[in-house]
Length: 287
Image 1: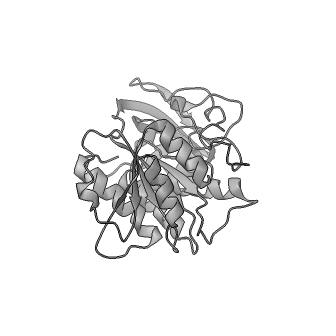
Image 2: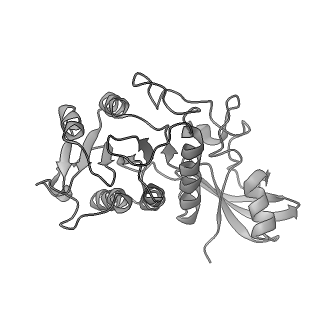
């Protein structure tokens, strides 16, 4: 029987003052205020209660908060049941339930493993899209092993996060957390603040990323992109109206290459996950 997965206390919950489980860094509050801001620079302290995930057999700890409530009240965990608790950075503790109280579950560690970091790291630069299609892209890309997701206010994006940047980013983060648990991931993708094209260009350039721009008129299939040995990949997916020529040329100026995903035209909800799955399959990475 597959063990359910829960997140260690604090993982995926924003905090401005406290250190967190597993040393996970998450981006800071709010959307970018200008093109000079960097969505990767506005980071808060890692979330959590300052304690690492217990990892020695016999260690006991309490799973509280939303995760504890879900385990105790929604899933009705019972003594003797086994569950996994992950820290979002590759740590996975196999635990036995030893006690259940209102909104909390007491656990005993049976074993611990540190799973290797996904390789390559795949960042999805996902244009905002209407009709929850971007939400679908975020969910499926997470299940397929994406490393990080960057919301992108592209030129032709119909959806607009203006004035609700943090609320919308948190929605994506919630989708990522749910999809990570469903797919039993121990590495939880980051969701950065929404960025403009200049901000995305600066971040990708600073990281020295291999940039793949998905385009239905590209001549080079993604399988022939020559990515052997690459450790840091970016996938650029535009909105329903597609990318502007200026955006394509901007990405090409920092080394980006346009690639064809399929002879069929894919929606903005499926293009990113398709690319993540293709790249992970070529490199043998499960994320």
